Length: 210
Image 1: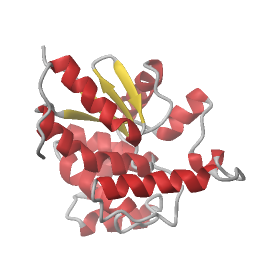
Image 2: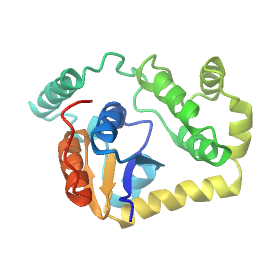
Image 3: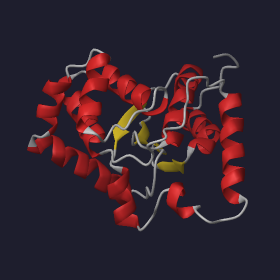
Image 4: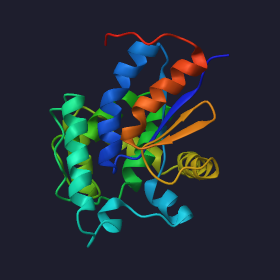
């Protein structure tokens, strides 16, 4: 049986963006493809009583600075050059995440996904502003009017709710969350453990290249 590996993401999480940059290398080394699963981070926070680091670290001495240091270490380790902080953060991602589900239904997920991350974390914009949202995606060649219309349909809305609820039911409390089979891992800094778990569960040696 093929091992199922999931990357549960919300475009509003900078750590999910950073983690995703490292996924192709893991895929090459393990020959296992990740399944990209859109979830609504706001819904997860509401269901679990969690909050974003933007809120939870406010007023705490030293910890925000250390987390910023760890982020820079991660960026250097993976040679990430395009990431920029979004000055409009936090951004309400409901439109973005419904759009991701609609794009999956319509078979245009990859270009939509790349465009969304580009306009959130590479050339950051206020992507919860409907006009900015439409202009940004249109500039990336996405038929965004079609996807916005599709995203308003009940099956898309239900799918996003179901994916979010399922994530919580399985133990998720934030993004990025990874599932390797039944094993859950949270955060970009767990990617080494994610890779080790994939290797253990598939019993494949890890390639030293890629």
